[in-house]
Image (tube, rainbow, N blue to C red):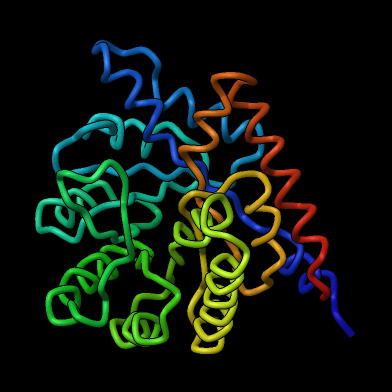
Amino acid sequence: MIDLAQKMAVSHLRLGVNIDHVATIRNARGGRHPDPVRAAKLAIEAGADGITAHLREDRRHISDNDIARLKGEIAKPLNLEMAATAEMIAIAVRTRPHAACLVPERRAERTTEGGLDAAGGRAELGPKIAALRDAGIQVSLFIAADPAQIEAAVALRAPVIEIHTGAWCHALLDGGKAAADAEWRRIREGARLASSLGLEVHAGHGLNYASAEAIASLREIVELNIGHFLIGEAVFTGLAETVKVMRAAMDRGRAKVSP
């Protein structure tokens, strides 16, 4: 029989809210408003299980001070999304967020455009992952749902992967049913493989209410990290309301998972 703890483990899908683009709006004019730390607190009050912030090398949105304040002021886990550079590793080790998600980063890109090449970068990534792990930080690798990348995450001793859902979300909007179905199968099979290998599986990038509800039905995925869509919708309905609606969509999707 399935006990209550097992049922809860299946039913609850964590929501991490990325507050980067609150900082983007602030930085467009300078000053302190709107405050991403205030946004993080509102998101948590509305049902977020954690907060994600991407400290980029060029500091285009989130600042070092934002990270320090988030670590000191929010009551839920902080996930520091970052490039795998010596500077960022040092900041993470000093700040000690709950988690660090390593992503590829190019200065010219507007957003993270693809998954990290863990398979091709094992020699470089290994010492950096070890440094984060030694500091007590949960390491996550932001990768495509590709078997070679998933197996590389296992070899690198990264306990968590975050599956890049951008190609699937793009296909849902513009790529047609065949492309969307192919990307969905890739995510589904990747999540199953990762879970079977002992990895904790997260997902994110490009998710909206409908796609988050759909992906919530994959029992292997335990956390979604969503930012740009929520901040965009907050312009019209308020941040607390967008988080609540997203939480409800995820819960509807999760209800389709059998214990």
